[in-house]
Image (cartoon, rainbow, N blue to C red):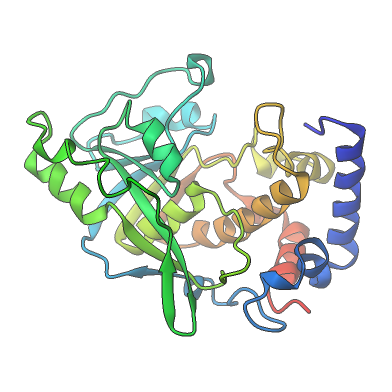
Length: 294
């Protein structure tokens, strides 16, 4: 995971700052540009941090399936008759997944990354793109990629796809998610899983979440604190040599929100992140990082 001695030292330094000065952590690691306002980052009322712009559809109950290994633990419990959304379901190698998921009428791919969408369309023609955005001076700006409006033209005349599935796709594709703590200078890498969970939770009466592990290989609730700190950098690997500071911040912001969503009555979390709240000390530190830091 650490890949080099330099990365190992960087990880230790990040952990030292996180534990000793959590309120200053973001400014030390990311710099002042991350703050939309002075001394402000996230709304303490977590639901205010995201806003779906002009939603076109609402669901009674849906499934959200991510690529984590815990999917295999829960897959026999999943009601696949529900509308089911697969996040970033593409794989570089078939050995990355125990079984290939084939598209059905009620199955949809979904992502917040256009590059991922292009890869996913090999398995899921109906791959939905969520456009993240920020607001500055009352003007909202959302992600835009060349080709995003043309890539699905053949889908809408595909006779193998039902009118109902096309209708759902049209109402969801290129939907806009405003991230109220982002600005025009600095935007955190949140990951598609978090963005999609936030989006779908806001338009669904109930959402069942599977495989949302955020690169963990085992249950977070059963980890001791040292193993947890080691696992928090798990996104950095030989395949994905992401800088360790970005891996760490992405992990803790995902933990910050997953702990919130697990406590909502309409969100049913089934993943290795389940029962994250048992790590009370970690949650306390993460809250200090994101709520009213200096």
